Length: 490
Image 1 (cartoon, rainbow, N blue to C red):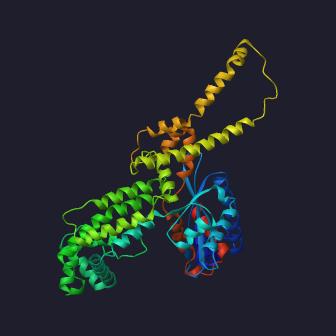
Image 2 (cartoon, rainbow, N blue to C red):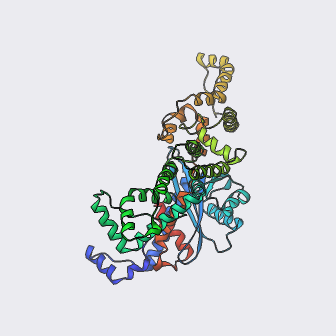
Image 3 (cartoon, rainbow, N blue to C red):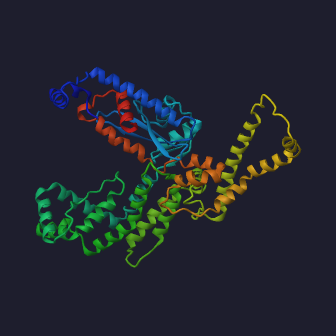
């Protein structure tokens, strides 16, 4: 993440010499060549890791300090050993306008570079930007899964738009900005915290609309520091920053409402476990939480809950393909396979969908078995082999019937005890499920690959920001691609 020119710096050379006087610092050209070779070797490893596997993608766009636009694509697979793996495939420069067609071309070019066919892509998880949604659905003809963390953020923002709550939150933002930008106020706040013997002397947090959970964190911190903050505001006569008792009470209730949304976002922001399977069960829990009323619910709080509920409901319409896709993922996750968030009719639809998929897998395997070559030399006959000849037809038919009792496999799977929500579903499939339910396991490995959020591609922006910094803003696009790739895949 440092400029390659660092090898020419006198200070760096002296530093290396102090560590090992015999070491010769390589030239800039040598380092560049080594980076290219390292990229090629790592890319080959990634190609082998995703070859012939069901692949799920996340993608998003970002702009560098030099105002160059890039599209990053990450790939997610489940290995033969039931481990979740993710790789950054491509960070391609997008010189044209950010239309859906151009975005889709950038994604497909990145896939082709790593030998990934569109047919092997299960789904692509993106935020709710129209150009990315259309790039996936209309141009790539692939399932688009909306990022649930982004969906939660949009719904919460709608709820926070209620006027009285919006005014209180806006005043908190001004208060946080005042204390964070005024050294005098910051020192005074610290003195008040000491006087009140507060164990934690934290600064206030300011809200950022594009940063998930930041409003919740701002309100929580302000409530923790309410007494010292109010004391400073009183001493400095900052009446424009003062909140009334009723406003503080209302914000306390807002914090309680938002807490499960923060927990949900954190829970789904992982790359190590399946998350798409948890999206609709988690949505069901959040909607149930919003339906709960307390005596402290003001008219504004009720309106806030209604707005969040309406926004969450419209995001996953029951007649949409995404709704069925995510429910199928939930069914294949032993934590949620009972589908308690669905009525019986919907549960049956998911059952039938999985049955159709495993039937197709069994049929393909059966046709493949019929094409196996016959043995070159027939074994010698014996009395036992004669018995085998006599009963072979009957036993083979019975064995085949037992092997292809797919409906029975589904019924037995549905009777499995539901795992706790904090259990690892991949560990269950590895240790238990894949042996008991071999056909369902094949479908599970496909659906459980899909991330419920686009967090992985957005995390790439952090490493990219360290690479394309002020001293390296002139990096060529292919160098950016290689360095971001190596920073995330090594």
